[in-house]
Image 1: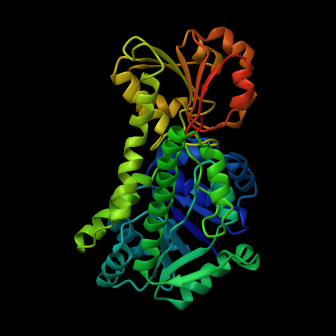
Image 2 (image 1 turned 45 degrees about the vertical axis):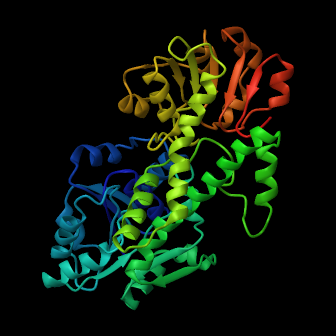
Image 3 (image 1 turned 90 degrees about the vertical axis):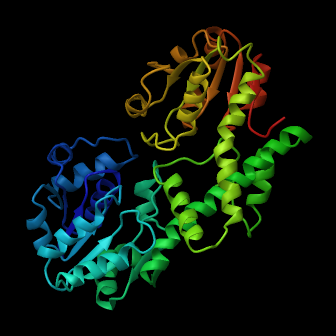
Length: 422
């Protein structure tokens, strides 16, 4: 079985490498010759834990190839996965692939798309005389854990009308299926809606615990212990029930916006989602207000910011609350010194003015009125805080991830502020 994966961004790069690692020959192809050439040379344009080694291993074994020959690769593939990061031109891509794809092959849509896309594409390819099976196959990958998420998914979701396509894709994922990963076969629309609804539900969970964290600060309760106790309730579960500064990621805002638009167009008021989006949007502003209360004035303050990625183990700053915090503080005149282990290149593309990128955490803290931990990189736990206390202008740490040992830091003379903690 030959697999083609169309795209050269984050999703296609991860998916092509991980599919090849399952033992199936895969060609990742795209019209972007520079991106494809870079990947073929082993240069991954972003950081994702363990991904570079998987690519190298499968390129060496010749299970993974890269190409710019779109029509040729589509014509020799049993399964063609459209895995672009954006759905902007998906109709044109699907039509081009269907024009050369073999009869009986499956066109799989893993690009994040709004509800109704697969049905529209099926009608489009049928109108052009193509008989390819269309499958909506959203992936649920999280930056920093994408390889793990691919290999140990909660489920494999297939929206299709074709039983033959289901059998083919089960064969493709045989190592996962044999491991007992559930395969859910449903309609196009249901599969597309699961992705958006899942994102919205997680955002709602995070927004709920963040509102409770604000309450904890007022009533002298501890939001970390509260989240632990709630998470151990089997009706709730602990994942994504951690107080912080909100939810980030490439598709979060888009998924929530798309779901809200779909509901609005059908006259359904999703009040809980509306409230969750409002809480999510306001939380960074609340953090700016918290900082303003502990420094003299924001317009003259210097803040050290540790972490720019939206979460650890990724270079992505898409939807990063750290970046939004930097923008809001800079807008009020605050000088920002920032450091992140891997995300500074991407951060600099997003924000060039009003922020100084530093070579390490201690340089970011140098002369700062406050040190803000914005991303929960594990290595920040191991910093030399005695040294940190010496370089800070004022020994004040604002820990937006509740990552650090508050008692130890206070015993060292730091003023420590977490989220939802006394």
